[in-house]
Image (cartoon, rainbow, N blue to C red; front, side, top):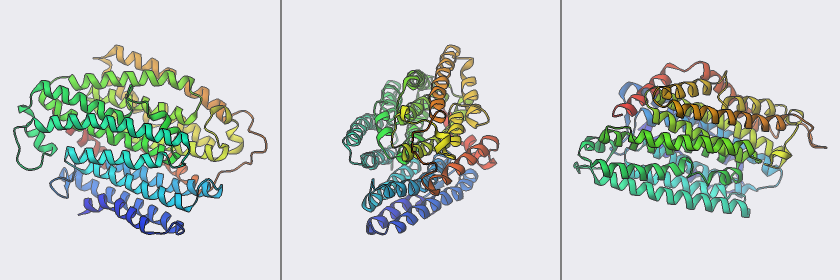
Length: 484
């Protein structure tokens, strides 16, 4: 019953917001915040049951296993901070007369539909329902990307919609190939039924089907060369939405790849899927590294950072062993760090009204909170101590050192380029002379509180991982490596 509440609550909140008039903007904000708190509470309540029982079922098609519960935690946790930040961010834009109450209502309506689709995707045991849910995330976010009704934003939304829809069409073809293979045809084709029929699947067809799935959902993840929608989308979407695309939706799309990877591994009993993930992972990291070094737009810079970290996740899951544990832990650390850095970028945009790096200087003089937070966020996202991404990247690369030493060496070189590229941009943004006549101060309290809370949470989790969360990750690793 609790799982049903978790899935349906964002939808109910969206319906309630739709019934409200735009002038009731404070009630809309409270609805979003209360629903986000409840979603986080439901997830935290469900996790101990998942750890104890192995899964929590709502029906034959909807069940939360350890991996699904782990992704639900990321969605709910980052979703709460994104909702809180969105309230402050949109209030600042309303005060500057960039948008009006009607646009605020539309934003929060689509935001809750976005969360509904993501919770649905991670809580279903049906590959087809998962595909429908992930396609629904594309539709809801496309309208959010074009939120400002500018020509460039509309073009970015169409690019996002077309490329992702074509990618998901390929993933649908791969899904249908998998569904057509098992000899077991009784009842709904869930992941469990597919695993039971894995040995009867034809290896060649499984390889073809997985390639379609990887290319299709890999487009949603943003792996190179399927990444072309990301820079435009992140630079034109409202900053909280860009944060969710990078820190949450990326992981939801990766979940789909991992589900099919486990199924393919059970059939092939080989390193076929791991090899593909390693190839796309290395390609993504190396490509992003060089673009980061020469990038001139800080929101596009963060887009290429997401591509880099998607590549790191692909490497971890491709390497296997300890790399799987490191990749899952990397997911939550990256989600928190990337949300933190995007919220900081949102505050920069509210102050400087530009996404060009050359226009952002002297942040320490005009943004007394955002500037130091941005510095620590960059430290975190680069994988430096004292943040947890240092440990996950070390474990991840160590797991591939014995079998793939040349791959690890190439990735380390690319990460060094990323380091120098980021610091080149960071120094220019934080120091120097601020623009003349720019007043010192942040936009409002609600654009500051999420930054402080996120930074504190990231630091705490970097040094102390709750036992329940550690067990949940261990169970997720066990489920992913069972057939590897």
